[in-house]
Length: 187
Image 1: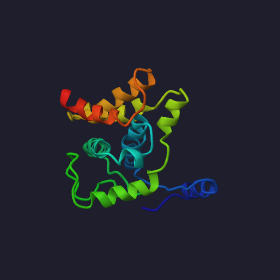
Image 2: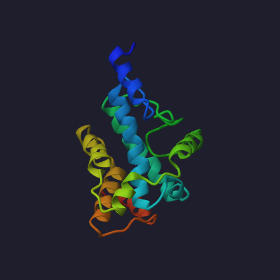
Image 3: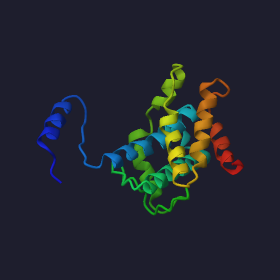
Image 4: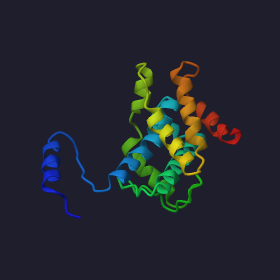
């Protein structure tokens, strides 16, 4: 589909300062950004570090995979078609159950290239005592999942863990990732 002249003018003007992409698939673009935030930003906030740091542990990899897969399942249930950002939004061999398949390691390596060493914005918010956006990220996935009769236990556990961190009951730590995984079996 052709882009409007007005859209192109706005894109050119904004491109002076930041990278800009235009799309007619706004819902898909929003879900693509949400997939990254759910599985990179919030897990890094819980673990207290970067994606590369938490992905070094088996628990970190499993939390990432399950969080991403839950959020992607919810996105697809809404009818959204997530757009390619840095990687294809649907990992190679995706089954929707958090179990890795052929090609997933290469896919994750591409995600790590872009986000692996970035301090997550939610972790920065926690460190500065600012309110987080957990309700609008993983909390949103949990709420939409319920609307479609789906479960999102890892995303739900992430919401509860971030709430505990922001209330001062817990401190960010990679050890919390094992607790997030245990929470899925308790619900």
